Image (cartoon, rainbow, N blue to C red):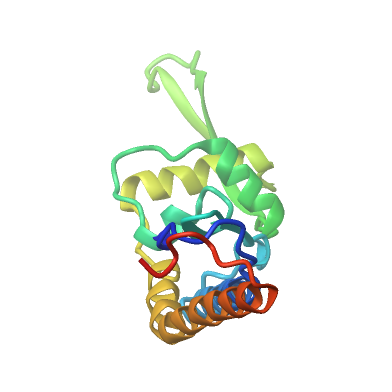
Length: 198
């Protein structure tokens, strides 16, 4: 959030709003590009659901980006040791979508041997094909994350740094233009704001 000197009431921040809209669009595109470079774009849901919220008050302005709450796991990674929320993994599976592979499993059981002199129990096994359900798949993915963690794939902070550097002068210029237009309008109307030049 940036502050603007609170000396001019009821100013229309037309130029500032235009630059902030361009700022938000530029940031979102840079973040999406970074997701693509990091191979973290999956279905595009994380990048496609970014939505800007621009607020301009009398003495401040800010640009907020609404984004899926799992963005931090992509940005910063996740340490091994803790099981991630299964419901978030299920959402990700359905959105991506993850296509499960048929697994070959082995069912093992023991049969009581009634033949004298033979081992007490006989081991039996049978292989079969199994397609994991969403719940099973989410558990398997969650277990792998808990055991190994995930690597960070920064996309947000690099996009923010790039956007700030690109728009720094444009923001200053927009504020100057809005203030100049306001003053010019007041002079033309002959209504000077009291104490403006003090």
